[in-house]
Image 1: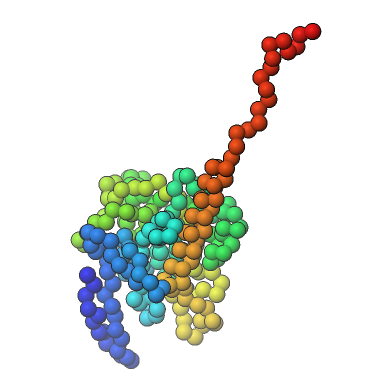
Image 2 (image 1 turned 45 degrees about the vertical axis):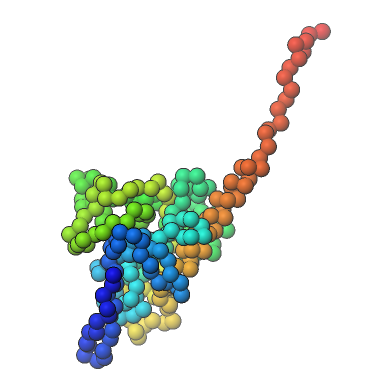
Length: 246
C-alpha cells in the first residue's frame, strides 16, 4: 500500500510528492489509476534511474506498468525509457498473424494509427540470460516480457532476476515510442526551448496501447474467421480404370 503523500520543500516553492508503489506490492494484482479509469496491474515499478530530475507530469507516474487489457485479452506494458519518455507494448502469441514480425514489416493499416508507427517488434526479454555471456541478468523492472504471476519483491535495490524469477510466456511484443517530432523528451527538457513539444503522459500512452491491443485482437479474430470459412479445395476426379485405353 502506498504511503500518504509527504511534502518536500524547495528554495522557490513547496511541492507535494506522492510515494509510488514499487514492484509487485501485493500477492494479488493491484489497482492502478490511469486515463480516468482503473486497471488491474500485475506489475508496478518505480525506476529512479529513468525518472527525469526536473519536475513535471511524470512526477506521479510509475515507470513500468504491466496488465492484461480486458477487452482484447492481450498483455500490455508501459515502460519509461532512459530519456524519460514512455513506450507502449502489446504481446501476441504464436497463433497471431503478426507473431515474429519485425517492426518495419507490420502492415501500414495496423502500424499507421499507432503514435509514431510501430517501432518495436521482438520476442520476450526473458531474464534467463547467461551471466557469463550477457553480464548481469536483466532485471524485471526493465524487461519487455509479461508476467502473470505476482510476487512480493522485498527490496528492489538488491533483488536480481534469475532463471526461475517468473513464469515465461511465449509472446512477441509489438510497440511504439513517444520521442518523435513534436514529443517532449523529459531528460532533454528546457523550459525556454520547449517549442510546443508535448509530453506524452501515461494517459496518452495507455489509450494508444489499448487501442493497438484491440486492433491486434481484431486482426486475430479476422484470421480465425477466414480459417473457419475455408472450403476444401476442388480436386480432380480419380482416373477411371479404363482411362488411357482404346
